[in-house]
Length: 237
Image (tube, rainbow, N blue to C red; front, side, top):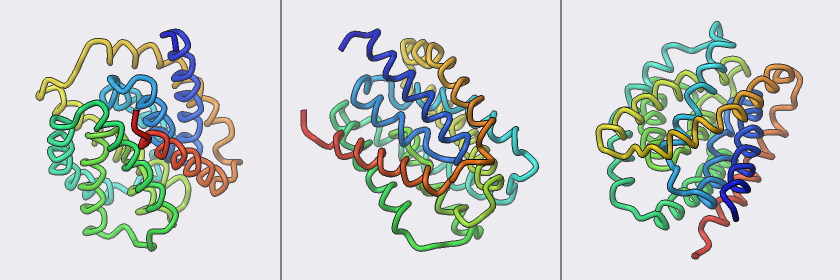
């Protein structure tokens, strides 16, 4: 596949994923990470984390009055040690191994989203979810489902805004640590910048309809797509 074709596929995935995350609260990494892993695994996780910064900043600002600040604090506290574990994983796995890890993480995240028992956002639960998210998002770019489980029974604005702020803080931490570890490359930044218009289009579209969508059906659609993508990534090449 040519570079132009790859860019068009990735731009389409980014726009759709931004729309989904803006409307539901999760879904961006679940859609984009497997597609990016299939077409340009060298962009992960840096380009994905860069793209998520403006997206989560926008969603968090849009519904800032609904943020659960206490939960954000405990999740962020757990995120730091998890980030170092994720960096360690990233440093020792090959590109093919990273694809396998992304595929497995995506499938486990989907299964957790579908079958994990309900739990409330207590201090211990928030910290534990922060650790898990730090590991998986730093290593693969996928970290949303544990946070979605944590807030799945809270009102939509609380879920979207709180998860967005948790992501924003965590992504800044992950990118800083990845930069210190020498994991940044110029082409990752350039691809992320080139994909920003697609991200903006999806985000703006989500603002127009996020309060009218059937979030449950969209969430099931996202999980189904993520499960299929994760299975494809596990196929040896």
